[in-house]
Length: 481
Image 1 (tube, rainbow, N blue to C red):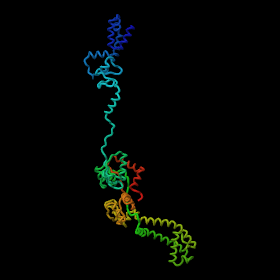
Image 2: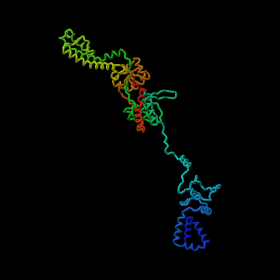
Image 3: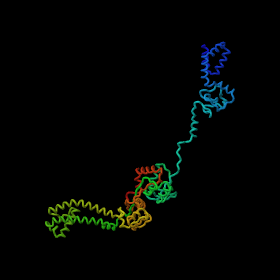
């Protein structure tokens, strides 16, 4: 019994065919075949045999059995696969037939480790070699590639110093200015590709609205234009400016002295001196008749003289009050005169400065002067609103030349434009003063609901907070006119 049991275990490992083959040999060669049949017929060994057969069937057949099957069966298709049986031409590293391959002759259907059949499938896929993986990655489409851009942004620009300055060259037009510099910085930070398109200054809003251009960098933001296009944060605010010569003539000084305001100050001060002198004369006219008592007219004149010299120099000493009341008034007047002298100096200075040709800051003052302005400009409209007549001028440069030739006394136009022309073309010969009227806010104009509006507007604000913004303004608009 023990001998046959050990042999049964061996048979289970060798497989069904080897078990049957050994069984027949044992039956023919062994004299104990009857005992083996008895053992095989027993129920418990029959159940054990069926159990071991069930375990052995899913296992792969030995190499010799596979070769015999391939010789006896018709040619089996390469693509036929079973779930539990691997095709004959598929080899793995762990189970390789002993006499299938030779060194000099290799079957066509036998695959190596580095070349696996397309249609053959194994229960566990082997990892792809590095070369095949690299090739697959190269053929695979790049899903993370950036989408192609639709094209450049068309930027409308017009010659409008100091915001956009055109310089003609052999290769075309070069642009410079405050607005041009600002747009270049914004486009660089936001990675915007663009191309310039020269437009008329008065057509900027129209061309943005109808889509001829995508953005205008020298547009003036107004309430009416805001209904048609969108504007970014303004980058410069200017107003109407007045240009006059910086040199005072004798006639200018005479006009300043004879101005109503100066005459009013002189009259007010004279009345104050007469009042103080009259009070002192009332105290001194009887005690010192030689100084303050030679009659009413002579006494009041002497008192007026005393109060004037006391205010300016604390008295010469030629006339001195002697009574208690007179000296008390004199002491009070000395103290008050210090404040009066300071106020008088400031008032006279303001009058002369207001009548100075370089310090005109109110449009109403131009009514007394010969004024020029560009017909149709904002400055000309402001002069018409103030009922100020003016001489029509073609361009701002002609207006400043008219001042230099004494044809007009003042020229009115945009303050930023006048400052730029005065600095670059006239070596700061004139004085430019801003009036604060008709303020114009220059900004970038874009079409309504433009997706880039918020980003561009935010970048405009950021550029104005940088350290190089003020030097840029001073480059085109120096503070010292």
